Amino acid sequence: MTFPVMPLRYRGAKKTSQMGSVARRAGREGDPVRIAIAVVAALCAAFCFALGSLNQQGAARQTHAGALRFGLLVALARQRRWLGGMAVTVLAFGIQAAALAFGPLALVQPLVATEVLFALPMIAHRNRRPLQPKGIIGGLSVVSGLAIFVAVSPPTRGVSVPSLSAWAPALAGITALTLTSASVGLRSCRTARVIWLAAATAVIYALLNAVTKSSIGLLMHRGAGVLATWEPYTLMAVGILGGLFGQSAFNAGPLSLSLPVIDTVEPVASVILGAAVFDERLARSPSLFALQLVGGAIAATGIAVLSHSPVTLAEERRQSRASGAQPGRPRLSRSRQGFTQLRDLMVCGPGQWATLGCHT
Image (cartoon, rainbow, N blue to C red; front, side):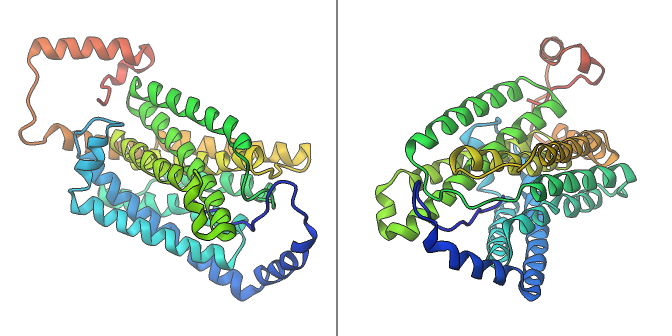
């Protein structure tokens, strides 16, 4: 996740008063020492994000609470491993904020997305299997595609505190998209379920970034008066919802699949929200827009490669064996097993009959 930090400006405000500060900021961000600090901090944040996600997903995968139920968060909050992973994630947010203080978002965001490259060796080590070239290629494709997408159209100075009328269409669209993704995800099997839930998580994270940006702008302008606006309370609600969807995606399947989806969809959704709500510009020309689409296609290809990579398949087999061997878990009768298999045939569809076994 990223926290877009932008200077305060309302719709229709004059730009002249900010020209000097923008020029000074550009000079500071171009300082090699500041850039070096930003790069190191962003890479440290990426490592911490990977480590935190690894611990959270390991705990979530072993929790038998249903997906998208608040009981899942309650059960996870009682596990030391999950709490440790959450603490590392909070530390990662702090390090990322420091990176953004020294360098531009267009530099920091792609570097933070390299958490995929840190996570894959960690997952391979946890599974006690070497990282195969297919997994490396998939991870590099995700990171390079995302870097192209962000670099072609870096965030521009837009509106820091949008009006409610600007938020309304975006909130309605995100709500519909999230509900659709959740509904399809809960009815899907294995890989499809992970992808749908992770995509919904990424969209919610993008909304969290946008509301955070607006809340920071209000705080800078009004101080304690920000508590009289709707943004801080929406921020808390979206944060809880993002946690629920994120842990449900971790619970659904391999981290080597859910994490690349989140890292790819979130910045794309953030750029779209920036254009729709904050009046930020997308690609400046058709050729740059086409290059942006190429970057997105490369990242999507990387996700497809990772979904069939040995590290993902090994992680799925390991976690399936672990969940099937949980002590005290009741065994199904033969009639119940037959009913469950028939249900899976109807839900999964012919394309997945060969690998029958929906994760419920």
